[in-house]
Length: 604
Ligand SMILES: [Zn+2]
Image (cartoon, rainbow, N blue to C red; front, side, top):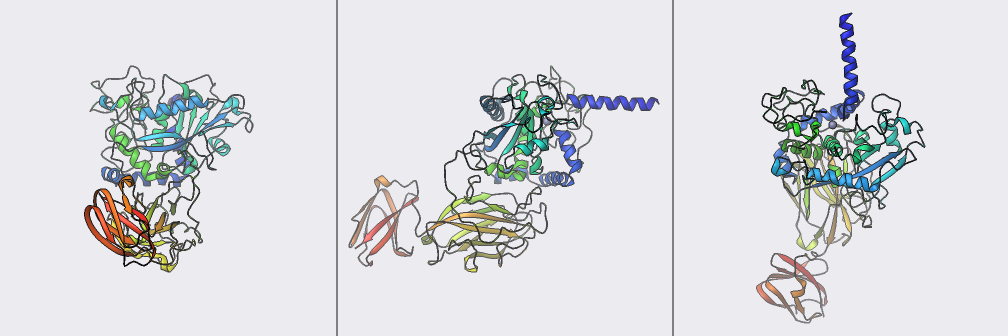
């Protein structure tokens, strides 16, 4: 009898603690994993993959080691109102997002610690969407009348803990933008029938980057947007969406953390459960003020506090900071799982650039035979000015096979380059990771949307892991549509896809790029046109060329891009005898000071 009563008391304590939690991230991840074993496996796979990643090497290879790299993430804020009030104004949302970015780059001031004071710059910037899913101009702020569909919303708000408010699934169904292009933030009037004027209790929660798209977003209470006493809710919640745990994780205000959820292999740094090595183990510091000092005893970690009491992910009330370990984990997990958001154009002003590459006539390849993270597919494609480093394999939450980097949509970043027939042979460099891949590539030279055998530029070549592997090919002199963006397709897989660019993949990935081919190279920006003199034009016999610095070489090409004259100069004045050339139009390429310029010349 006594035992039974004790259990009941504990149960009630648990309920009451849960009601006090500021952040419902753990509860919602736990609920998701309980109901969706694929989501749980995706999380475990991602943590496993991270464990086997040399993080510093990964960051360096992805350009994330540079202090100037900042990832702009388009955000759309859905203001889930009750039809009577706008919930929050645009100006309030704009200031709220700007403040979050100042927290991340440590320029907020106040008790947000600068790098000199021990803080760490988080290289993410939330940018309110500037182009909508239908490619129209937008503020990135959407007002949604929830009460019109769910009358109970005005009092009960959003359901978080099995109450009869409106569920997050129902709210998402009212307004949602593609999570591969935008980060969706839902602002609700309240959670679980808590009176709207009450600012304590649950403030919000956010999904992990490994979550399925359907639950990768955040829900927050409207009061946090204007809460000047604790402006950390958005930087904290997006922290979860970058892949950060609470440093106290399974602990509470009264208990140190004990176990990792879900269970992971025992690791040197998992004793405090947030899988970050430079955050000490800690209890939740919810409501703790003043905070302990670094010299004070930490009941969860014999090594002391090490500033974990000031950590943004630890409900701190002052001296807010992230650690370098959190930054490294966040950037790596984000790039490995939500890379598309770093390449989205959702936050870029709409320029009205029309789609340019025609669609393929064959269907996109179907999903690979084996789904999951097998580290197959290109991790780097470089050609011309394109150098795209990306994650291998398909992400386990979407099993995406085709990554179309051409400008076919206004919402995705185009990876485009120009190539000139005259600079044959060309080089396509690829890389893969973990497993040897079979690479094939096609260039749709005749721009008919199909990949013919004659357009195969890399024919089922084996590429060793982690090795930049160049392949050379020559653009043919005939049958090429010049001056028009063409589709380049690169396939890395365990299967040989060379006979069928739209065939069944075993594990890998297809990446499409945009290549514009010209007969001769287009001019380079660094060439000083004002100081270039070329005369006479048209000419009969002699062509004079003058430039401000030494001209290294002059190359004259015909309209097919074939070189007809090459002359080394090494002087700022050049005289070229063109008397032997047939009357026609020619392209004269002047190479000087490491750049070049092409000028059209008429031979009479
Ligand atoms: Zn949290």
